[in-house]
Image (cartoon, rainbow, N blue to C red; front, side, top):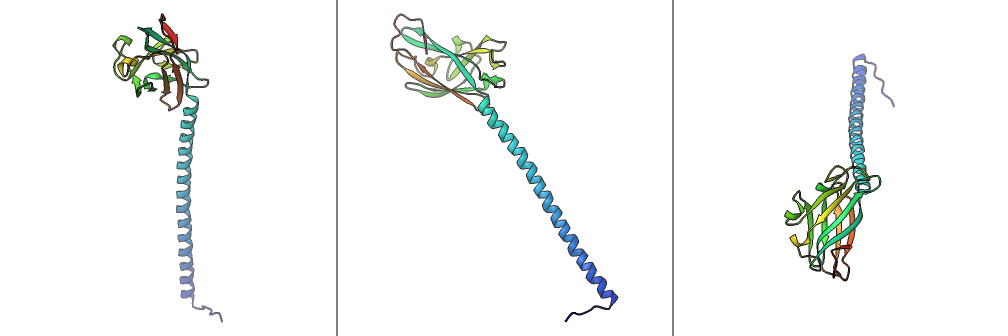
Length: 194
């Protein structure tokens, strides 16, 4: 039933064959373990980066403190928003932010300009520090920056009863929406709350 190998030379060859198969199995297992460890490390770093980005989108928002419009000839020619950091937010650079304007007859995306308010043109907005040391960056929660938008550079001035949706998107991708409503009457007014 069983064949016994009595020749010493043949017994050595069987042992070497078994050893080669065993070494090959160990090498395959080591390579597979290396691939698994590399994949796990990559997934861990990718997951951490995704978590940080998601956290930044949620926490790095701005709050609109107040909004008013300058009235000229019974229409709003400048919309002014006062903004600050939301609680727990990092530094927010408004020059890297965009504002989506969805108004009575126009929808556009506004970008930051360093031009003075008098020289603004196109789809743009300007920023000025009210409280703090920087015209563009909110560093502390006590900082306040005024965002100035001149609708006539990309649409037309706002009339009585007009409504505009403003969505401010920071460099982190977080969004803040604000509805600006022009009062029903602008007669004999120089400025109105929006």
